[in-house]
Each structure stands twice: as C-alpha cells, then as structure tokens.
Image 1 (tube, rainbow, N blue to C red):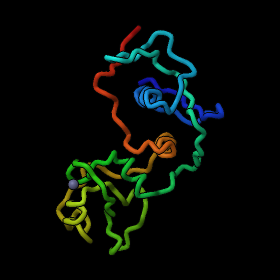
Image 2 (cartoon, rainbow, N blue to C red):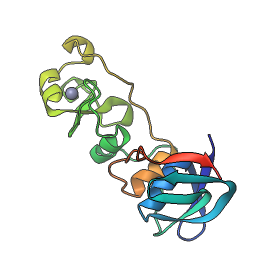
Image 3 (cartoon, helix red, strand yellow):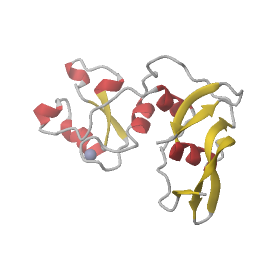
Length: 168
Ligand SMILES: [Zn+2]
C-alpha cells in the first residue's frame, strides 16, 4: 500500500495516510495535491486525478504529537466509524467496556462506540457478564488517526465505490 505524506497548511510534515484517505481529503476540499505519483491515477465516474504522493491541508491544524491522542467521546465514535462494537450497526453512544460503576475509566482502551440499544442492554456489566462479545478490540489512535480527528473528519467517509485505483 502506498502511503501519502500529509503536510500542514504551514508545509510542516504531519503524518502519512493511506492513498485512499488522501484522495478523500482532496475530494472533500480539505487538502490539495502538492506532489503526485508520475504513473498512477485515481479514476472514477466523475473523477480522474493523479494519485497524490504529498498533500497539504487547506487549513492549519494543531496536532498534539503525543503518543496518545486525548480521549473524547466524539473521538471514540470517529475511531470506531460510528459502528457499534457489539452488533455493527450505527452507533451514537459510547460504552465503557469495564463499566464506570465498576471503576472503568474514560480511556481509549476502555471505551467503544455502541448503539443505544446495546449500551442500554449491557448496562453496568462487563461484556462477559452481559454475554455480549466485542466485535473488535478498542485501540489507541495512531498519530495519523489523531491528525484526522483534529481535522474533524467526523464520519471517516469510506472511499466511494466508484473510485478505483488504476495505472495511467
Ligand atoms: Zn449495537
């Protein structure tokens, strides 16, 4: 997988993202292409652009370069792409894996996106106690994830299906 370097609006290198993510940022007018692959294009029904090798954000974002992005409910929903960790359907709430009533903390590794129904059903129980398996383990966002959070890319839009990568 080719990664694309992301520069801040100030031209300071920030991070790398996947090529697909870079194209989505460009198509969303959040970034411009600074340097393109000479031989690779991204083609779709109404798109045909050189595959970006370096992109630059259109506005300056402050990215805390800590190893750990600050926890937030919104960040958990974004990290989990608004998918419930228990059923995979759309999530609007944040569930504490180890419930707060049992000492669970607001941390990346203890929280997952959950639909309201599952959050209510699980209540103050662990997944084991509730008999509800996690579809995936919670994780700490990488610096690239933190950058995307800082960009307020609130939906982690998936690449449109019509957009495919092809050689020029
Ligand atoms: Zn659910």
